[in-house]
Length: 302
Image (tube, rainbow, N blue to C red; front, top):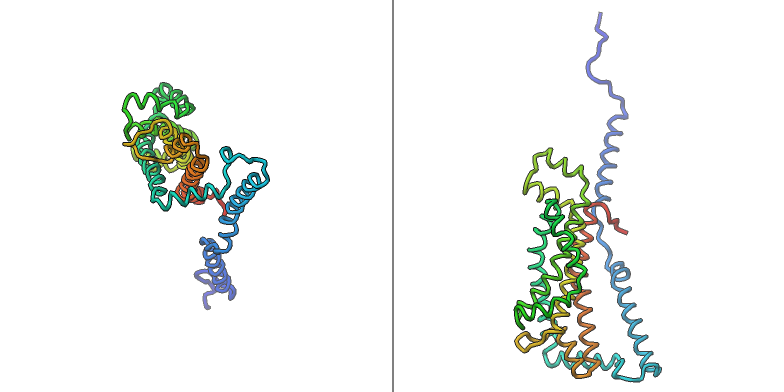
């Protein structure tokens, strides 16, 4: 009598088709999950057109105030054409880029120094309770202190030199960077810390692989605020402390316009200060912020 026992699993004719369909669906899902390239037209409409429209609107209102006679005193509000003439004259003289580079180079170098000092300081304050209780309130107080308050003592301590500028930048930016990192570490879920220790991450490994990546959003916010404090501190120092050895930065250009009673020069300095601040944010901090948020699933592509 033949055996009626069977070995293995009995397959139905539709199993192979179902498996193939499942694989095809997964492949399609993976292809759709990849980052799609944003069309250039969409970028222009969503990213470039709104700020250009805002700038044109400001220029139209500005010109309307001058042309209508509401503000008819050029010493109070010059026409946009007068400011443009000031821009063109500085460009033709070859001094426009010098003004910008003098301030930008100081600001970026001072910010990098503040980054080197503020990052380990923030980590120590965030992780050591005694140090946090001792200097945490001092950092918060220094962050709320106007940067211009540091210019007179810095001039007396260091003289009219570039190191005085950097000292003012550090005193303004370090507390912001440190406090931003402290805030980021405070927002790290305790589960992440326990999981890291369970996996063997201790000491510097725990800080580098667990704490810093988890605290990155708060740390990046602190860096962004630290740059704002660096830039404002530098402008305050350049306005108050002027010397031929220091060169002419944007703050000094603003002060020169006040001394010469030249409103076009004053507006030129103000516009350049705004342009540099906006450019640094758009070119450095905004892309970093979007990348960090997108890597954590907090930013959805529209």
